Image (cartoon, rainbow, N blue to C red; front, side, top):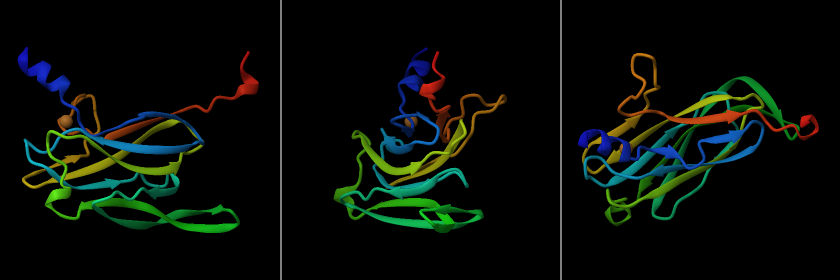
Length: 168
Ligand SMILES: [Cu+2]
């Protein structure tokens, strides 16, 4: 009973807005509500879903060094008359020094923005949280066998765009 209460109060890494309409510009704010068994967080690495988002850009963060990795697109697309052949694959925020670490008892957000796909569906982000001791790899997708994984990946539900002209 006590264990269950503790588990449900436990805030994993999650999105501030876990649901957003298809085809819109989306601000993904990853909420980090705790460290690793009491240890402070010193790095957050977000892996973006493949070929799902467009024009993704990370937001820099004071006290943290931002680095990114890109990957080639299997199907290039057009944006503002230019052919886009690669996309943002990974964003890494690394604390510059010990005083910039995020203590276990504090809360912070790590942000990126992107355009969502035109189709509704689920998107999954993997988040690696590196602490001064230990780490979390938020990467597991719920399944029938494991509906509540210990370290779930971060889910974004893209819902159908509202079509005003079709509202009766
Ligand atoms: Cu948690």
